[in-house]
Length: 387
Image (cartoon, rainbow, N blue to C red):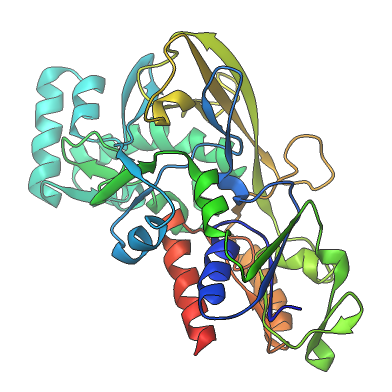
């Protein structure tokens, strides 16, 4: 009845399914949740706010391919994301930039630090905090330690449950120090949000005669990978078409090599009158004893036509992923340590023994993808599969 089996209806699974359907393949998508869209799912709440149920998602990209594909399913409106950080009682721009220096230091010292940074790295550059800390210049080193202590250290500890030194440098490198006066969080050429929200993108994307979607169905019990035989069973029978799997890989293989670590999130959703904060997101890079949460997001600031009278915020608390816990039972981010990546490689080797099994996406590939990157990756994957 179908040529391709796709597990998961997030960006990876839905994008691949649409491209394959347009290539003439009949696709069955099985999604564990009661809705499509994965963690990008949003829905209107009692305040008239389009709430991102699994945390805020901001679309930004330099990928023409991703924009052209997604624009088939949505109109856009311009939105430039700005983030403030609570540092020593003040709200300062994040990523830490030249304006942040002016907010945190006395004018004479701030002017000197600005000059040293610009002379050393050049205006408009982005410097990872770990590289900044390696500088031999006393002024840069002092600034680096201040930023490390007040922006990176405690936020990282709360977000990941590890110290900065225990994590792969790629984790902290994603949020560098910006040698500029640009207060935008992202510098991409395309910064817009879907006019009707992300959920509508998925509903339109999956509206194709060659696609069948089953929501509220856990596919894992119906799948049985047999690496030693090089095949996979679906409902007890061998399925020889492509199986695109976007869930966590250790679950598919019954955790036979142990569980992979993920970070999870829990959101304290609150309703307030009027507006709550000056920008969409305020980070709290403070010790956990001071603020147990990492950031507060105000969702109506992500809308084209936000309501005026009420607002909805989400106070974000990180947790270690535990599939049986009340809070922290959704895997969000792979935890990049040497041990975890070695364990993932073991699961990937098992998957590779099954020629028609394709792990795809953030969870299945155990790596971080922005929305544009996974859209582009899934399109390219599907195009190769069609060949």
